[in-house]
Length: 249
Image (cartoon, rainbow, N blue to C red; front, top):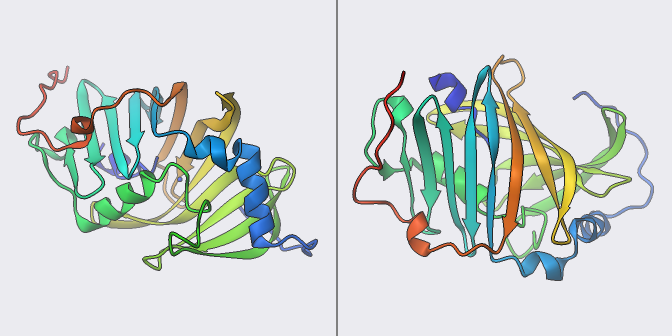
């Protein structure tokens, strides 16, 4: 169970082919338009995503809440216990009953960096220059049966990731990179599927993640995505007491 939990990352072979005159900024501009446009995206001040998660053969529920600027709360419930990770935009904390402790405590530096990335619900390509990110067009490749642009994204902290944007859809179809979590450094990838419109913005309702070379897998299926729900700032602050956890049967 502990190894499965470390895979939680809310994450192909290819051959290069000639580019056809598209620049990084043109690809990103088309991707933003395909998602619903920058004005519509910026009008979203909070999100609530709820659904089911499958970790290996263990099924549970997932709740993700985000609020500008930089706030995130993630709850994953499995077998009567709930893992909580959150940040108020300044500090991060967690309650992890799967690691043998039930008290709230601060996130490690690696986990805080990861949750800070997850709190950016515009994602790294939007306003990438202002965020201090660098984006390079590596090539035009194949992902399953779809043509994709492969973008190398160097984040402000020098971490490198690769984003795959569909040539036809202009939507992000895959992410891959190295993840450091709970002291474990591993390669991870996520596939974004089943895009649907929510109040004029496109969201993937299925996210499948894995770690190449490892049997652990993760699948998230969102049942509901809400835009601009009322979220109190206290939802993202570390509590003084521990929420009650149901006993494991």
